[in-house]
Length: 358
Image 1 (cartoon, rainbow, N blue to C red):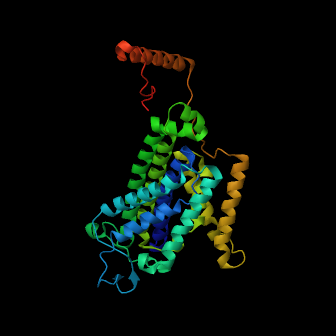
Image 2 (tube, rainbow, N blue to C red):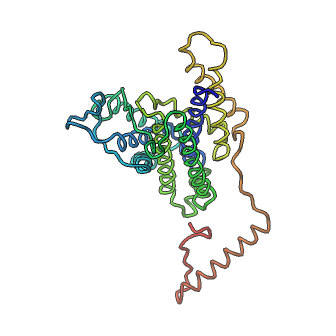
Image 3 (cartoon, helix red, strand yellow):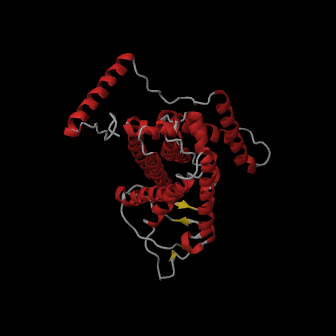
């Protein structure tokens, strides 16, 4: 296999991993918690810039110059995995700040538009302030993680990075899977289906939605760090609003709330359908390729929303048999009796939580 083919394969595999991490984070927000986030790429950008600032090293000469050609506000150089952890923290912290402002006040379409606007504002701030993160030119020459430790270079390091990305994806999958099957995940799905019903059962809707939003933002930050660690550059042009719509298309085609469906969508949308126009006979000008890809994504989204709204791998619905319901009813009765006993002489039942521990 030639070096050029191996480089293409490693690049493709790393992008698969990056998209998996990002789409699992967005799926936690949109598919599980029901938060329409059209500005998700903002959190990916936050992680990418955080990774860059924690690896490029300090600014020199007190003028904010690095290597004589790029300017940024602050920088340091810390070993792996600290830059990745910083990216996670940056994505989560930004999600917390945005979520506190947007989530309690807006719902549905208004929420999606507000988050998209926040993303556009973030891009405008970075683009028009060169001293902040080098403006439109972005940051380049970002060090590769563990390159000095492994002693690898070229295609050998690329395959090593593929393995590192796969390991990170496995850890992220474990996290999102555990969240999905936990009482917290079930509560998020209940909130997604009916906020009023969840609130009537004593669930703290605002706090749980915000928590899901923060975790999703943190995963977005991690995806940005993994991407920048491989391509070694990042600029405002890398995180246009259309990137988020690719992620949304992945979730719609794969299946809302389904981690396995998201994995299928990542393989189909940005990899197969995204790369397909590259291998087809050229239609019109070469500059039309990006537009053709977006048209294809839009057609796929509309087709699945119309004919298969639950996606290729629908979210698994939890069902209970009659014996399960009878057993659960007895458990509730036992808990109520215990509450009466613990109430002591007053004889007033205390309900400190439901049977699920929430």
